[in-house]
Length: 156
Image (tube, rainbow, N blue to C red; front, side, top):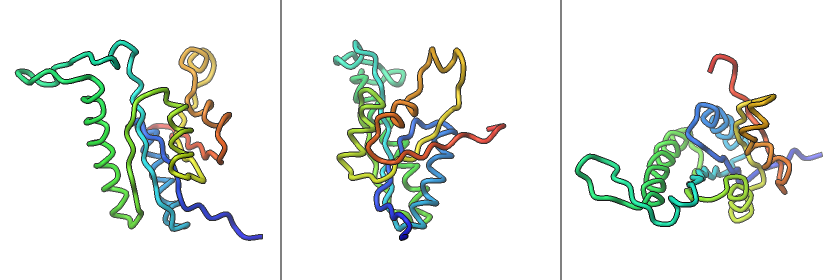
């Protein structure tokens, strides 16, 4: 039986240490398989803020749309992360968007032709899990492709 070869790996990233651990593991898998990584950040904006509300990002700066500000910030962070991963010889593309996180992950996986999703999990249990929910759990339950979940080592 031939081992499974993944050519495109989706890595949803929320800029947490948990997501950094998942990205590092995804990089290692990509190196083994010669795969391309797709780094995805989904900004989940409160409904009113997505309608063109303005924010002043710096003192004395001109007001900008909250969505535009979120996208610029996400793109800059993704660009930095992608450059770090590329130094290891891995092909990396980035996607920044807004919307429902779990839905956008599924949509991006389909659009990019991802054969594997690698994402972090905080491992919440009990009331924290009930109250906060779990994007990772939603993706695992509804994904059409395998999902590799990465838990942050204790102490991180």
